[in-house]
Length: 256
Image (cartoon, rainbow, N blue to C red; front, side, top):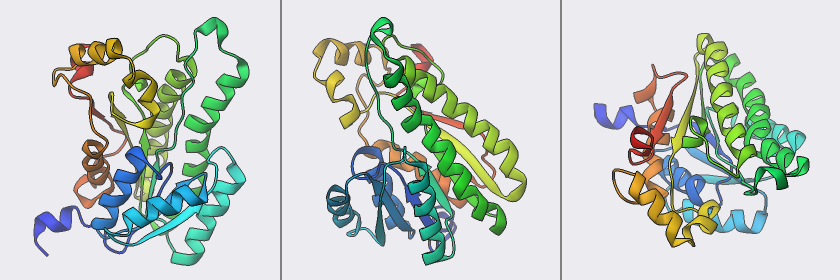
């Protein structure tokens, strides 16, 4: 194996990717499996997850773990099961997320709690559970999928913006605490991508143009264009990268 292959080789590693039945998570899973990892994909619905697993299996080894990331005991049990089966969990990607779009005055406390629980609290709980084994073994990679809204703000999505800002803070705190044990924690900030979570926005030509006009590449990203960033942060190539926010937004935040 040449140096280039070794830098991005995940052979022998086990990765848990949440929200992996579609979108970013599915693209991560395909690439990680191709890089040699045993990929455990998560989603809420077993049938949908099995369909995704059939896709990932064409690229390499895959298993499924159906649970709601907002159910903290279920997430902890899933990580314990992975540890029992494989003796390790090397990579955790906190990708699962949701959004509720409403004006601030119409935003209910229940709306707020739901988004925060899925987009932030779940990442905290899963990172806490996964880090225990990682610290014990002296190696691990935690990757949080944030957003350009980890550093910017937009109207009518207060909980999502707060959660993504909080996710960046969680990333930095975990990086500071776990780094000495050989565990890195980094985040990725996608810009506007053609994913299911953005279906409502993609259906609005005015908003599509708004994004295009403010993005130097003049287009939305495609989910597969984020996968390489995740592989980099999970791989030996990023062994000295810790506490970093890797922005993948076509240049939007440089001109927004």
